[in-house]
Length: 282
Ligand code: MN
Ligand code: MN
Image (cartoon, rainbow, N blue to C red; front, side):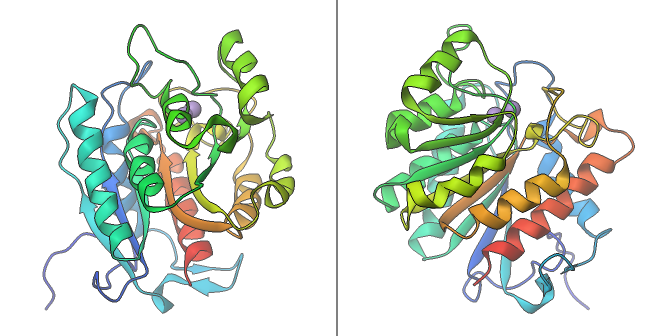
C-alpha cells in the first residue's frame, strides 16, 4: 500500500530526482471581479486523474519523466505582501536546487512572487505573458498590488521592455498607451510568438499563462472572462514556440472552477498543464 498522497497525475517522483517541481499558490484576495481562483490547484489535481499522462501532440508521457508535486503553499488571505513573500521564498528553494518551478494559481498576482525569485536567480529575465488583460495599471483603486497591476510590478523589476504580451484585448486606454511606449505587446492573437526568439535569443524566460487568454466559449471558468479569445489549440501551438526558449520558470493562473459547473474548464486546465510540463521536461 501507498500513503494517501494527492498529486497532479504522474507527478509522484521525489524532489531530489525531479527536474521540475510543481506547486500551488491558492490565493485570490485582489481579484477585481469574481473570486474563486484559490480553488484552482486542488481542482486541477483532482481532475487530472481524468486525463491521460500521454500526449499524442508531442509523443511524450508524464510517466516517463520525474516531476515532483510539492502541494499548495498555505497562504494568508488579505494583505498580499506576506503571501508574495511566501511564494517568492518557496520558488527560490526550487530554483536554488537547480530545478524548474511550475506554479498553479491562484489569481494572476501570485506571478509577482515567483518572478521576484526568478529575477534574483537569473540576470536579464524576460517574461512571456499569455493573457486577455494587459495587467499594466500602476494601481487598481489605489492598490499597487493587484492582478490588474501584476505585469507593471514585474516590469518594475526586470524592465518593461522585457515583457512580451500576447492575446491582449482588455485594459484601459492608459495601459495600452503605456504598452506602446514600453512593453512588447501583441493584441488579440498569439501569432506574434513566432517572432519572439529573434528578440529574446537565449536569455532566461518566465512563462506566465493567465487562462483568461482563452475564449470564454472554451474556458468560462475564470474570474474575468473576456470575449474574443484564442482556443486551446492556438495556445498549445504558442507553447510549442515559447517552451523552445530558455525557460527557467512557468505558471498558469486564474482558473476559477466553480464558474464552469460542466467541469470542462478544469479539464482544459489539466490538459494544458500536461502539455506545458511535457514541453518543459529535459
Ligand atoms: Mn492577468
Ligand atoms: Mn487576464
